[in-house]
Length: 160
Image 1 (cartoon, one colour):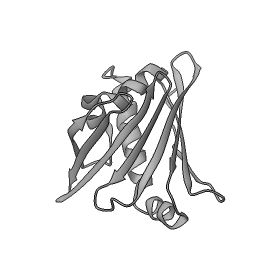
Image 2 (tube, helix red, strand yellow):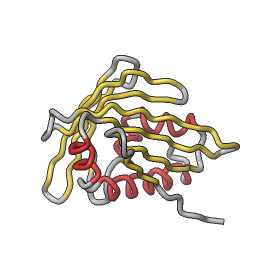
Image 3 (tube, rainbow, N blue to C red):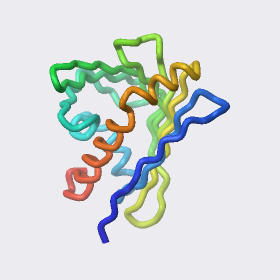
């Protein structure tokens, strides 16, 4: 049976945080690799019609990263630091370079659900509700849905 997984996005009413949940036909190790291997990450991140170019990637505790996304004549750069990279969890910061004052603290957790199934729990905390709401209205849903669909295909064809 082939079912399409849905990405759930929730805005906490009491804290300026966004929570994202998505199930994958993958092991936690596969999802960790998809989020930490720069070659794999560049293949699935972002909406359709964009291309990610990794400029710097050091996926380890204390490491940093930067990538540029290009599409439709637009260029968007993102950067951050990996604070913790573990077998079932990544803690990192993330900033959109056009708005460098907005830095999110992100936690990604990979919950094993059983053989070949993993739930991704992602949380992104910013300093104000206004900034959180601006992120939600930025096209985040489109980028997440497209990126997760690409990741699903990569998992299914054995790329990850």
